[in-house]
Image 1 (cartoon, rainbow, N blue to C red):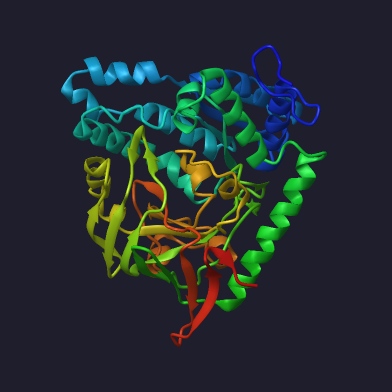
Image 2: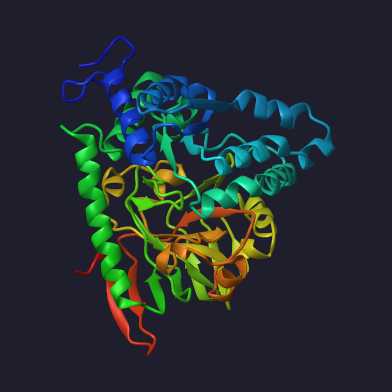
Length: 422
């Protein structure tokens, strides 16, 4: 059964009811929003219905103020079509400084993902790189507070027509949009009797997995599969995280809705070998496919891609840390998102279908005691990477095995054919 807009009625729930449930999960599970907190939202213009639902839910939870900043694909393309060359070295530093100030004053942060995966694929790669670099530099004050989990934050998704057309290219627009919404709702666990309880159970399972990995205290992980033989050394005093966690402001939040991963911090100088991506990377409107890189002593020394290679090259030149790892994450090939059989062309989803690594900035929370009291110098001494970027890309599949390596070099099976070894 569908409603007048073509959206399915699932488990007796209308599209509007499912949207309200997603908003409830975003605010209460994703953010753990506290009464009296301000909330800053960033979202594509096409996602207004979800923004409004989240805003209502946030005020019900006691938010003191909700402020939303919208992005617009047409305006973005207008910049590339008509702006003078010098404009691509400019970013709204005043905006990001204001966001950082809001976070320092206790605001929570929520991002809604739904961008067109290929928005900038036809644009000049040098201009795309310059614009991204300018934005990354301007965003540093806010990004550091987010990456260090100084605040409670989360990312959720909303279906948009350009994204739906990419995921379901052979379906009529209305059907493609409805199918993408169905996939988002399913991955976000909102269709059952009690979505919050479903998240509590899922978080408990992820917590149990992190506890097992933390007991092992592996020195490194080794990934082996087609086009991949990669050893990722782990940072000294690293800690595995996953699911719900406590931000430094004391609020328990789920940074990603959905999430299927457990993750930790690699050592920036102890990554060696070669690796091939198993899913495309959608980065700032450019689709990068078939990534292959070679690491030596933690640094990417060779890199190529089947498509989007020019953008990848620019990304790797962002700064010294852009060629080193800031995260390694394990995800079973049978995860709910992987089991959907869909390629989402969206990192929030595709990273939760496969084990992955991230170029760039490390999370300071992935250290014993949550990195509390550690200075930047302390973190660097333990191997944490610093960069203007943090970009996840997928390296796991049902053909990839993962071993944990002990300090003595003994290999302990962690995953076989993409599945956990219990």
